[in-house]
Amino acid sequence: MHVSEKLTILADAAKYDASCASSGSRRKNTPGGLGNAATSGICHSWSADGRCISLLKLLLSNDCLYDCAYCLSRRSNTIPRATFTPEEVVDLTINFYLRNYIEGLFLSSAVYDHPDTTMADMIEVCRVLRKKHQFNGYIHLKIIPGASSELVTEAGLLADRLSVNIELPSSQSLKQLAPQKSRKGILQPMQQIGEYARGYDRERKKSRHVPGFCPAGQSTQMIVGASTEHDLQILTLTQSLYQTMHLRRVYYSAYIAVNDAPDLPARTSAPPLIREHRLYQADWLLRFYHFQASEILSVKDPFLDERLDPKAAWALKNFDVFPLDINRASYEELLRVPGLGVISAKRIVATRRVAAIREQDLKKIGLVMKRAKYFLTINGRKLVDSVPAYPALVSAMCKVETASTRRLIRESRQLRLF
Image (cartoon, rainbow, N blue to C red; front, side, top):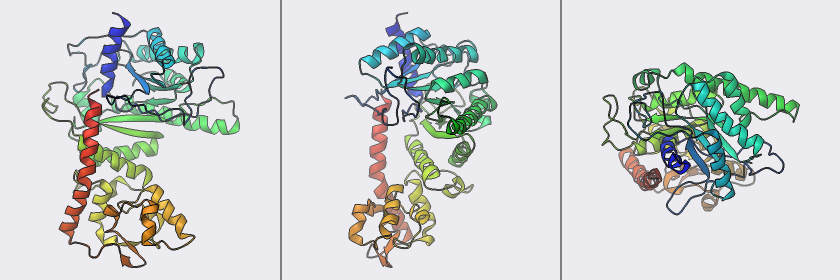
């Protein structure tokens, strides 16, 4: 099979992996080499038809031993199969870079022989790029669950970012939909990457000659909607992963029905894009707004409200703590106000050190008035003439959210076409 045919098959097969963001790296470049993966050296480029082209996104192979119910590359599917050699991926990467098509490489693979064999071939791609061609560009490498710890270590010394897809939020759904995979096999390399990254960071503080290990951190991906877990389970797992696995990012992928199976949604079902969007918003609250999963959702109310962003939903459920005076509220309290972000909350705190904030200052600070006006006062004075009754307030907040949500979902649908 010609390389161009393989590229058509394996680039298309890679489109279901959402966790391919390029966020930059602290890895030191090789003098005289190709490319740059510095923090400011990677940015997403968008073509006229909406495709993200900053990374060459490929599977090394889609010829899989496993038969995961949700996966297009599952063993029992009758689809065109292809496998690159490491040399072919290297040639594609170098040639695409020299043509200014890409800034780096995202490489994943189906397990086509044994986890160690597959992982070794993926590492060989990285090794040849780094050692032979002195490629300094960004490399994001998927770790194959079940690969040896030695291979995981070698991958971390060559790639900028590593990721192990957790796939499904519970052991039960993994056993049901991907019986050849195990939770232990997925979590073990994640834990190893986190421990090694912390260890290498400590050693680098002692000596600048210590190599960087996975300098852009590790990430993972969960499929949303293929199994029956509620959002509280997903966010609780996410919170645990951030706290224990040294993760940089958790990605959520709305399930796209590509197979027929009794335990899966029907192929006519639309991907749960709004749910995916709300999970990303809730994830942001966990990482940057000091929220806990148990605050965002509860056992009695385990699903995110699709009408509202999670912070607005929390504020309406806890309306008794509002309104807050913008000149007296703490930084942590300000972070909980709808329409206020991390940057605007920091600006408020910094401005208050010099002078009291006035209403005419709010736009300069970056406060989104249509969201925040019901939850703030200035020196005891409300920002609206009257706060509507609770049902009307919920309706007003939903209307504010509807337009932005529809726009985001429309853009997401357009990107998923490519």
